[in-house]
Each structure stands twice: as structure tokens, then as C-alpha cells.
Length: 127
Image 1 (tube, helix red, strand yellow):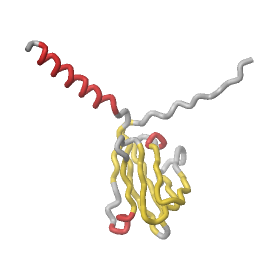
Image 2: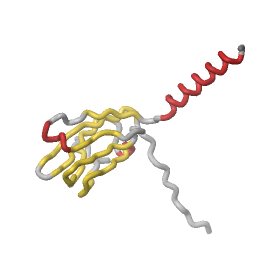
Image 3: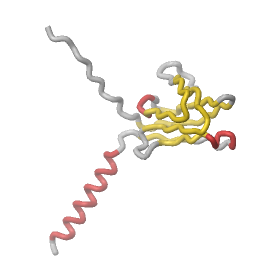
Image 4: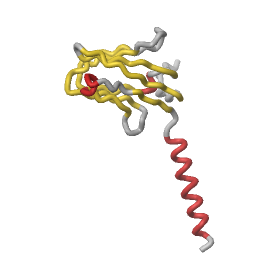
């Protein structure tokens, strides 16, 4: 009987540690609620590290309309779906525009904590 409370405390501690370390970055999406934008699904995936765009119509382009020119996203999609990793967005407010001819659908993704960049391993020649 004395072991039972210790087991429950250990399980709770492991559960809270898993929740706190599971997601390193944090972002919020402010969706476009216009009726014409209802055809474009724009939300995060289950792990909340990728922006998912889906539509019945073709999505032509996706770009950021921020004031700074560095690290802007300009992608030609030409597909009905697209996934944008959130580590490509900079910290702060990112205004994204998805173009579906003739519509321009604007929504905001606010990155509060930066997502880790993938580690790129480069090969070097050894003399």
C-alpha cells in the first residue's frame, strides 16, 4: 500500500514532463473568417509544427506580406494542398497571403517561440 502513492506521483511527474518538453515552439493562427475564404482550410497539423493548406480549388501562390524583406516566403504552390513548416517563419507576426485566382486570402500566423531549425549536415573532404 505504501508503494501506490509513489507510483501515482511518478506517473504524474512523467506525464507533465512529457507535455512540457513535447513542443518546443509555439504559434497561434488567426484565420480569415470571410465567407469567400471558407473554401481554403488553413490550420496547423496535430503536432502544431506545420501549417496545412487544403482546398478544392488550386492554390497558386503563398507568400508573406511582412514589412521586412529578409526571410520572406514566396512559394509557387500550383496544387490543392501545401504544408509549410513553421520553422521557416520568423518570430513575431507573419501575414500570409494564399492566392486562388482571383481570390487573395489573408491570414496571420504569430510565432511566439521559435521552432528549431533542422540540422543540416555537410560533408567535407578529408585530405
